[in-house]
Image 1 (cartoon, one colour):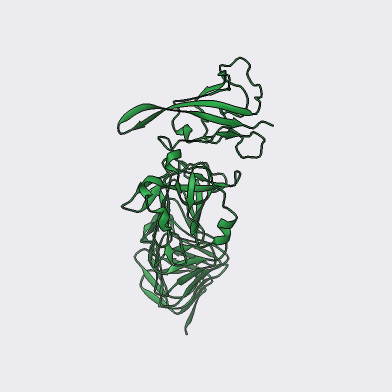
Image 2 (cartoon, one colour):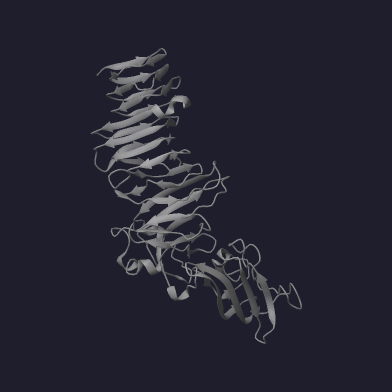
Length: 417
């Protein structure tokens, strides 16, 4: 085997083929130039590689130095990982690519990604699964980067970061199945969202079995983890999909009517409803508004008889003891309809609470009933005794047929002791 050491700065402008390539100096590949490494490529700690052309990597890729491209010529930069044997991508430093193509015929896992990796251009999943083995490593798609052609045959297993304010489909999967998650464009260019998909983890669902009242059957075969990283503030609409190979049959009987996205609420220790707009043609389901939190997501059926127009759900038990469960009168999704009004009366018909634009933040932090008198009442900010109360909720709802007021009334129980 021929080992080629690049000790001095080289400008490559014509097609070249190397055996094992060890770069110890500077390697600059000009636009419209093709370079191939038949075996392993190693970029030493003191080395710099700027790829403004096309490199074919037929072996392993080891980056301990600087691997990047020059911004003025970035659209020419492409790295193609291709082989009929498993390839390892590793190193002390993260290599930054523009365009990347994964094309390896090895079954199951074709690429062992032991280090981080990033791209600013198109990442084409032609053949071969890319697998990360560490939770502190990820494949980062920078602003403007796109994942193309992901499938069962080629996707990423492990953490994927998306940086920037672009709509994005995470090319993720597990155990040979491609199961994407899609987010709408966040507001800020520096927002970072991280996601991964997990299939067949029974222990996970054993310890997360609680459900909000409206949630009926949870898909315990799979889940997606989606996190908004530190210092990110953007909100997103989430789209997931179903697949008959992983989604239980009973969840799909009336999918267009009762299949929703649910999220595990760590504080309440239960799966909560994030709503769902079903597209049967593409077998996808999308949250009707921005998700209220992040963490673990999966699909579930909901009790349609609990749902008011706009997926508003009333939970009629309040126990404001500070344990994070039922601490306020929850009217789920009412914040989507700010032209609303909530009134609460005691058993003698005296109004003890009244407000408009109830739960305006959508998380119970302001303008909610917590067992105290409030609004146009005689004695404000007084604690109310344990007992049964009567509520009246009204809100303006709009759809293709126009706007109308929805009204709901019923009983709620307050446990104030």
